[in-house]
Length: 314
Image 1 (tube, rainbow, N blue to C red):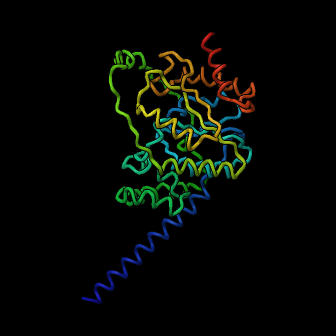
Image 2: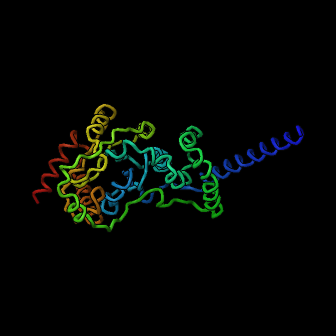
Image 3: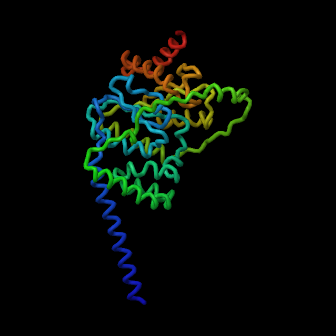
């Protein structure tokens, strides 16, 4: 019996070793066949989740590429940023969305929904420490996603072509227009007590810290931004917590708040996403700000506020 057990253990060790070597080899091939080189050598990129993904129409903003993606947490944005910086030396400014619903994004890092969605794209660029974050918080999902991740890596490698997909982020042309009905349903909403979400994901914010450090070490300017939001937007209602963290943790960072940018209901897809009509108005206006020296202004927010007032008067 002892000989049989030893053989089983030996077989198990050899099998695990083979699996590990296969994963390592596939990751190495994947890194060689994946390109994060951006077309037209943009000087600026936008990173974040679905709000900037819908707001910044990069076809209307010279020398800017929108790399935002729905559901992106700072955890996954970090790996994308690292490779983009490495392969795009012309890059000068990194705009990073920082808004209230990003304070608690643990679900977007290691939930059963997001591990299969995000991990296969970025696993080849993760360290063991990064992978342990996922394993410790959702071991079953982490183990189950390995076969999917391996399949995607081998598929890309077999194609033997440089691979950069909009799966890593792009402007999203949102056609939805249901804000009027949402606002109508929220009539009298000011009298309803909203639940305040005071939880903060230290893991997510630690990766934002890592992104900022990475950019600064590579000579890239980081500017935190907040995309336009409808005045009726009340998703997490943790503004007090948000501004406290902004002040105490990121008080030395450049920050540009566009949440009060004037748009009509028809220019929103819903209360937190501008649609393609709103994106056109906002992006053309943002391009004008860049052309008028926004990034060189000593007090950027004062300049933005003045320009928004002018926009309201039009």
